[in-house]
Length: 189
Image: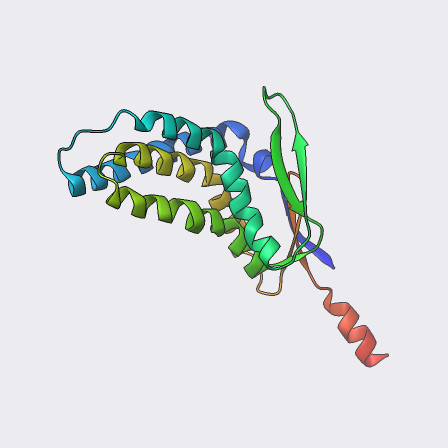
């Protein structure tokens, strides 16, 4: 196997850029989702009791997002290992990595799954929930902001060749290609 590219998103793009773009993405997502849902529902009184559910959902959001990444890998019977790390942060961060190589399609599926499992159902719920659409709009926008790094990950993997294999690490990933010289050496020796 040859390493096509090693990518450490925080080092390549910078932590300030990622945080800034996450914030900008979340604000833009809130503006659009709130405009769409408020236009759909019209002027309606927002239920203040929803703040408790909103705060609980925001506390659970990082865990739900992580679970959204891991669920397709578990369903595809790929071994997953969880780890906690703390680096210049108040709270430790839980993350995962796979113990095996993933194909390009599986790694893109794992990166997109929180969007399909959390964001899309929350948007649909926002259309059906008249009293809580503001909180749902906030929840959706925060999740889209959290998913910003996933979209960077997808854009980096999408540039790789079709036969690429992705090896996840704790804070980086490597895109590997099968060595074509092995095929020619075995065939012509």
